[in-house]
Length: 185
Ligand code: 5GP
Image (cartoon, rainbow, N blue to C red; front, side, top):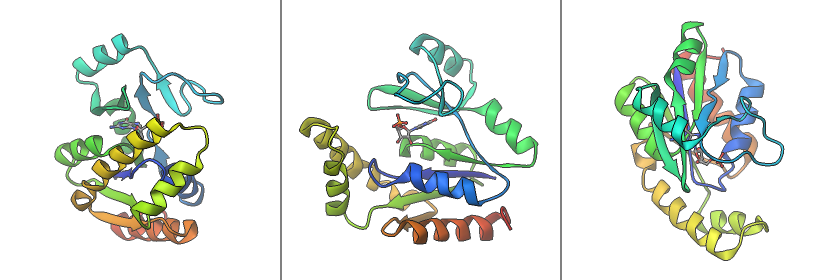
């Protein structure tokens, strides 16, 4: 089964996804292709397959991506070969992707399970984003506008789970995945 997890920046998606993968059997995280530059401790082939814009466009135009989107000025895409490979081995694949990508997966693979992580409130999300002292006001303003836009898509997802308490959020998503697919049972 394909499991899509989306949610606005600052909602704690990566932490939730790491916890799910640590505690559930039979699920692999899809490693996306991106034109974004590597950050500090990232390595090619671990967080992403890092590539040039030219190569990204080439593989996209060859139809090798299940979905792709431009997020904050960089291109991101899911390799169809990667996903099909894991599904072929009888494993589930978890895609942590933005809402544009989520909608494309839903259109192409309607049997996928789409889960949206919600902040307890918009004010709480704003506080979390402002708490990241590395970002200046303009970046935060853009992230909040983007978060608002992403939240508008939440109703199109199969499930919405609030991340107020991390353990509860992870537990709820684990239950949704287990009851929907038998994965991790
Ligand atoms: P970051 O650069 O911070 O790792 O990710 C930025 C955004 O891109 C996040 O919202 C993440 O979910 C999204 N993203 C990562 N990989 C993909 C992908 O393969 N497809 C799409 N559509 N979005 C992605």
